[in-house]
Length: 383
Image (tube, rainbow, N blue to C red; front, side, top):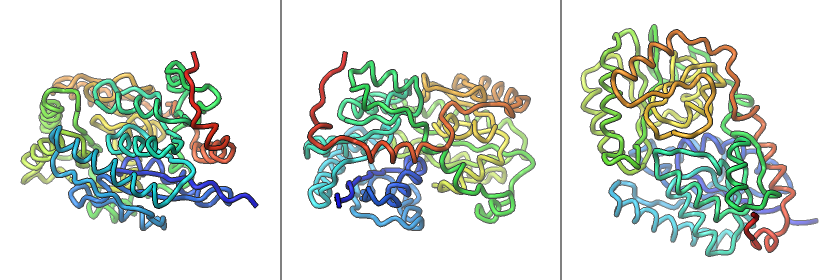
């Protein structure tokens, strides 16, 4: 009997794990595959909710933990974190000896992990390549990962076409959809009562789910955009509860967290969470009147709940978006106008362009039928 193919998944943060959750489950459940798991990045940081506990609670065995110290979000600090990720993942790969690395997205620690795989002559499968986020350095990192990867698992045909135009082997470019939608099909979404108990607070008459991440190509890393968002939220009545999640670990997160802390102080219409975890986050998304900020979740998952998204600024610029997404300039006036549009919007017929919630099974099917290691590693440019 042929030994199972060892698939090493690397995850570095809460949002990425939420997308990978069912992929990991299906790999672990398949007798032809063997799941290995490397956890790094903000998962291991108390300041970001130490979300490794969510992974453990789901029953996944963690094969390696690679701490990378995210306390310094300056350019030199992030470079040091990338160096720690590169060396730590390289050491883990030498010990685990996987047959293939599986990663998702565009974060700096994931780029470092893929560099480690490259040095180890380890094939890489990449989920969500070919997407575009014009306002973030993640855009360049995502495309760099694409060129280092050997198997491409795109969330939509537009992104798959971009990957093919980058010279990648068309035979290894697969449109699978966004695996984040699998959660919506396979995991019961919390009802209002259960959600309020899990949140430790009641929902309001109106509710907004607000997530704003650093805009890494902006000179101030998006701080002025975030301050404009806070000014707009200030103009809303107290009956509208603002549910805020803290930013990710991108450069600029420290200033955004400090501004958030000053703004929240003494307010009774705001709830703040370092991390909601996938179950609470999606449960809240299903209950709110709008999703506000610049998180990809407003484009990936929110349309499936038929909830409008107000996408602020250009962090997600160029990314495929459903009709429920309102893009607006990062000014108080534009955000308030978008909020008014969202209140009047009927999203009941919106179709999510990121698939049908069956991405995980498609990904597993691809992983099971890949050619051998030597064939995958022999990449050439396809014109």
